[in-house]
Image 1 (spheres, rainbow, N blue to C red):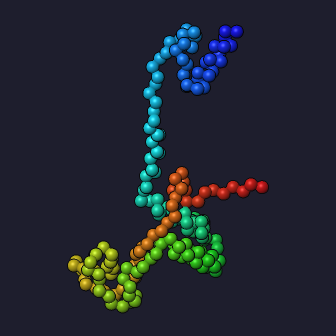
Image 2 (tube, one colour):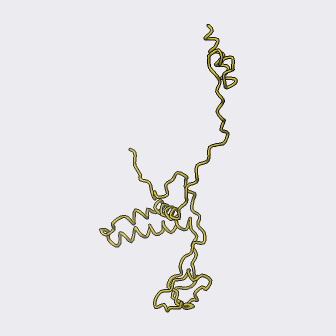
Image 3 (cartoon, rainbow, N blue to C red):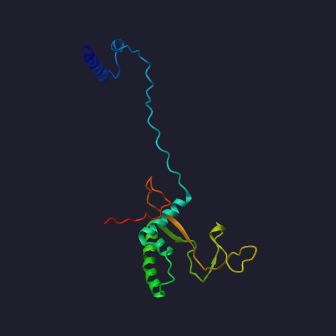
Length: 177
């Protein structure tokens, strides 16, 4: 009967006090050990994933794949198709890609001029202009505009999920029947 009473004492000591009383320890023939230090510091948050410069490019490529299947088109061998078939596919692909890019990136011309006309080269940043043709050793002050160039004035890509692997452009699709 004493064992049952001792078991109840142990149970209620642990339930209400979190430890056995010295009397209960003595009756059990045990000695008390110093309590382990209680750790009150919260676990350190997991480190933020490192952002690589390629992540944005891969994310944009993933958007183009999702919205227009651009990667599928580029990876397919189109040699067997007629020009009419390719042209029809490219027209729809072009519209879908343009809409996807416009949704996330605002583009403006580097030089807002008419192609084929003479323009002055901007002097503030020589890296935004590429001279082509018969270029002298000292770059000229201007020339015929062959391409306006493009500048991203705003990039608003959606946030990437923390566990998402940016190298996966499009996940494989498995149909369940």
